[in-house]
Amino acid sequence: MSQVSTSFDVPSLPVTKRGRATRRAILEAAEATVAEFGYERASVAEITRRAGIAQGTFYVHFPDKKAAFLELVRHVNHEVRETGSRATEGLTDRAAMERAGFRAFFKRVLEEPSVYQIIRQSEFVDTDVHRSHYRTLAEPYTDGLRNAMESGQIANDIDPELLAYILMGIAEFMGMKMVVWENELPPQSAFDQLMTFILRGMGAKEVHE
Image 1 (cartoon, rainbow, N blue to C red):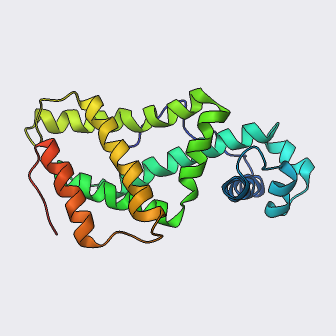
Image 2: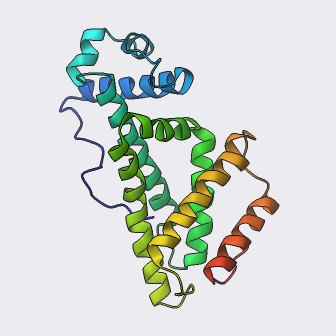
């Protein structure tokens, strides 16, 4: 998926290097705290303890816990999009792009399984932000699939936006099943089976490494 600029992007960072480092520490601590306790039980006191800062410093950057959490959701969204962009950079074949994108996403969630907890809990904290997460991922994905349809790389008998959400759903659930639950990347044979199913469904030429 290519990177797009939207209002859902990560907000501007503080001007000073120290301010940016503090904000980053808060978000990292918030991610770990929410992953362990859940949003409702996560406290500003615990976040600041893990970040190694005073509670007053937290409120310099965020008005409350919800604001910090929503920026964390936007940060996760940005990182997922960047991961996809880097993985597919320079590729023009849609089948190769799907394989690279799925593999990169799986590696990402292996490194940061809290991605699932953050996004799922966002549904109950702010529905609009939760939906924006998926819409922001789907928009460039849809454009890429539409271009692949127009160039004849994949079948054009399905709405590209619908296909984007189908593929995102497969990636999210299979990332949970094959990576998070197993705490490792799937064997190459299992990954190939998954991609064979996906590429056949898209009417794309199968690519194996």
